[in-house]
Length: 417
Image (cartoon, rainbow, N blue to C red; front, side, top):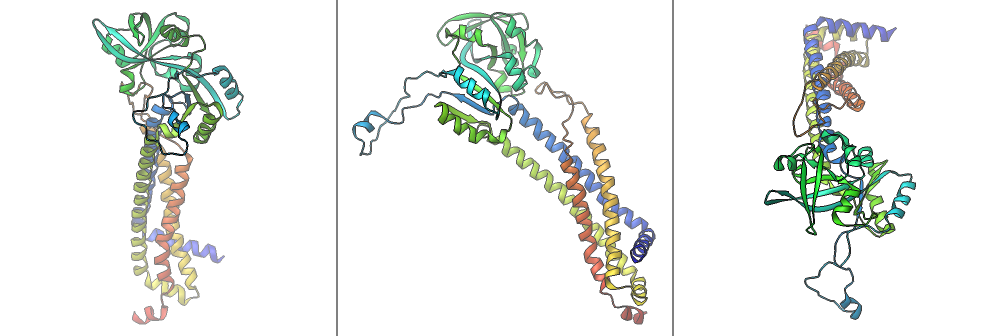
C-alpha cells in the first residue's frame, strides 16, 4: 500500500513538471540514441577495415625463411669463446616446405584447425612491350582459397573456377590489369626469375581493396605456377592455416614451429597495427557515448534539484503527516528512474532505427568492391550497455537530490512560512 502511494506521489510530481521532465527524458533519449548509433557504426567500420586484411590473411602461415645458420663453424671450433663474425650470409636452403603432404595430414586431423590451403609465391616480371613490371604470382588451390579466404568475393570480373579449368590461366590484380591495359580473354606475357617467358590467358580481375597489393599480385593455379618455375608437383612454399578460434594463433604458431621445424607467423603478430587501430577507435566511441550519458545525467540532477526547491512545502507536509526521510528519498529516486527508463527505452528504439537507416545508405567505392552500404554492427552488447548505463546514470542523478530532500526538517520549513 505504502509503495503504491509513493508511486502515485511520484507520478503527480512528474506530471506537475511535465515540460522539465520531458526535457530531461529527451536528453537521456538523445544520449542513448547517439551512443547506440555511434558504437554500431564505429564497430561496423572496424569490422570492415579489419576484414580487408583478416579475410585474406591466414591465422597461421607456415614457410621457410632465408636466414643465417644460428651456430657458425667458428662456434664449433671455439665453443668457449666469444666469436664476432661479420657479414654472415644466409645458409643455402630452399624456400619450399619439406614433407608437405605429412604436415597437411597432421593439420587436417587437428580439431583446432578449420582448414589448410597450400600456396606458392614466386616473383615475376609482367612484360609490357619493352618494359618490365615487377610483381608476384601466387599459386593457389582455388577451391580452398574460396572456402577459407573468400577469394571469389574479391574477383570483380570473370569466373574464379576458370583458373582451375582453363590451362595456363591467370587472375590479374586490378592495378596490374590497368597498367597493362588488358581484360578478360587477353594474353599476357610473364618472365620468371629464371628468365623463362610464358604466355598466360587472363580469366579474371582481382581487387582486394588494398591498392598496393593489387598493383603487384596476381593468381594462378598451383599446377600452372609449378610449371612456370620448373618445380615438381609437390613444390609448395606456404601453408595457410585457418583456425576455429583465432585467439589460439600465437600459441599454435610456436607449437608448429617446433613440431614441423619451419617458420610460422600468426595473424596477431603480422597485423598488430590493425588491432591497435580498432581498439583506439572503439575506446573513442565508448568515451563519446558515455560522455553524452553523463551530460544527460547532469540535466536530470539539475531538474530534480529545482523540483526539490519548488516542492519544499509539499515535502514538509509529507514529512509532517508521517512520511519518513526514506519515503521522500524513494519518491525522488522513482522520478529519476522513471525518466531514465522511459528515455533510455525510447533511445534504444531510436538508436536501432537510426542504425538501420544508415545501414541502407549506398556506399559504393572502387576500393571496396564487396561493400554496398555503410557498415553497421547490431551487437546486443551495445544495447545492454546503453540500457544499463542509462539506469545507473539517472539513479545517481536522482540519488543526491533525493538525499537532500530526505533531510529537510519540516518544522523549519513550516516556521519559515
